[in-house]
Image (cartoon, rainbow, N blue to C red):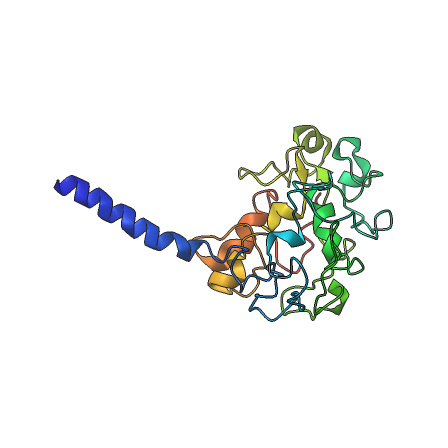
Length: 252
C-alpha cells in the first residue's frame, strides 16, 4: 500500500512538473500561431467575428476536406514566391556542390519549409486559405512588427540552409569533419533539414516558458538550463560550435 501511494505521489509530481518544461500549445490563445479571433497575444489574428472560421485555430493551416497534397490536411496554397526564393550561400558552404544533398533543386524550398513559407514569405496572404479567405489584422507577414529575436518574414539568403538532405552519403562527401548526424529526431522523413528541424510550429516553448534571451521563438529543444538551449540544438549537427557571431551554417 505504501509503495502504491509512493508511486502515485511521484506520478502526480511529474504531472505537475511536465507543463513547466513544455509550454503553450497552439490551442492556447497566447500562442502566436493561434491566429483565431480569440487570440490574446496581440500579434496576427482574425478580426471579423462574422466570417466562418474566424473563431477556429487549426483552420489557418489545416482542413479535413479538400486539402492540398503539400502537407497533412494542408489548407494553404504554395507560397507566392515559389521559384524565386534566394539560397543561403557562402564560400565554404559545401552542400551546394554535393549532389546527394539535393540543395537548390527545382523544388526549392520543399517539405515543411515550403509550408512555413506559405505565410512567412512576406507576400502570401495570411488569411488566404484554400477553402476561404479570412480578414486579418495583418494582410501579410511584411505587415507584422519584428521582435527582438525574430523577423516574421523569412529571408532564406540570411538564415540557416533548409530543404537539403543530411545523411551519411552527404557527410562522407564533406571535408573538415565538423558536421555529424543528429541524435535527436530532427530531420524529416527524407533525411532533410527543414525549418522544423529547429522550430516546432505548434509549441511555443522558448517564449512561453522561459522567455530566454537568445532562444528563438518555437525553439524545438529546451535544455535543462534554458540558456543552453540554442547551443545544444546547434551541437546536434555541428561538431564544433564556435562563437555566436560566427555563421554556424558555413560548414554545411
